[in-house]
Length: 505
Ligand code: AHR
Image (cartoon, rainbow, N blue to C red; front, side, top):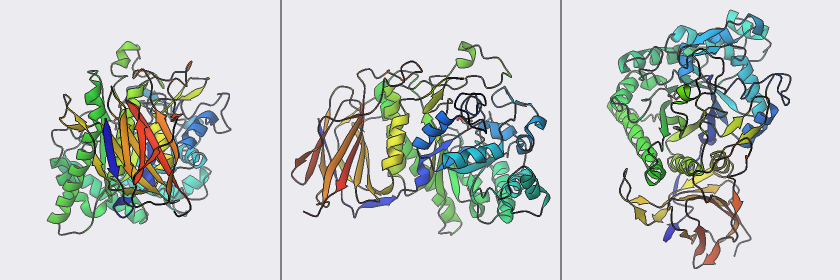
């Protein structure tokens, strides 16, 4: 099979906001406890942070990290997680039916972020709480001093403000599973009022309002319009969340799912712009895709693994990812890049142990799941300007959609003048010969072709065999052809084609 891309540096979608490659860390299962924080672990530092995990998270170069939830935040009292650890209360977490020891909280998270080299993105509780507690948290974190809350932070060992710039106004507030779920009117009002007072405390912050918790919600569309009708003037971003599943083991349909992510982004952007039009405003609400991933392997685990209610840090949502999941995650990264004009923040959900690219064993090693690799590649090589290509690809029909292109790709003009093409060949049977017409790039030459594939699409990485699925270099670099290069994309593969600038021809 053959496919082609014509690329021209003048045809651009947008600059990539580096925050597209963010992560999400929730108090859920073993993400915090035994994941990023395990005092007593052989690699633990003086703060109890696992150094092996710190290294793997750093490797992903995530510019932003959302915390502390997720569903958890809607019942969380941030005050329980600050101050002397031995005085912090143990609490029931109703979202995940676990016990929260509160030995890790906001200040530990900020410390951990500094060690990772990432910026915190804090969510406030708009489920059981409201504008007053949200305002208090901004004051505790960001006010320089001279007030009870900012001085309390100092007393807790943080003389300088945390300077948290990015704030989420609650989480998935339309979901009946959410503690303190709200109607669009209720949420729109409380989001607007919380945003107002949070910004009065610190005018430099940016705010994310909750969109629908998924495109499949019956209220999707109406929710966005109503929430923004109230909160439009007070917020900067609207959130989107999406998880894809292959529970029915229909791989061609599963691989096609990232196409729906692009449609979801288009629809949400249209809804934001409709509100702008109704308000006669040129302001553009940008999008924060702050939960996205594959999630289905662990469904039913609570029963299967006999996890008891109110256990502390039980193994929840521990999806073991396969090769085909990595192809879908690659497709989702491609979708995010191709809509970089509207999506400014992205957070893979989540980062460690809980539907995550990184896994840990208690007291033991940490390792990379299959999905680690497409994220790593996109985060390292996906920065710059996304190009708008002319694409020709053969297509296939599957249960979910007709005419799915076998090729899904995104091309980024990197800041060093190089070019990176990310491409997934969704064919389960044949390689795809990709013709790259680089007629307007006379100085580019192939530098690297990385491939992630495996003979078994269900192959995964485990504690005992952590390197079953890992990237390899293509045997040959793309071949020169008229006006460009040709690369062979193996069947069912994720590819990173890198071109570097050479002396002018
Ligand atoms: O990421 C897991 C959960 O998925 C989050 O807590 C919630 O926001 C979403 O439903």
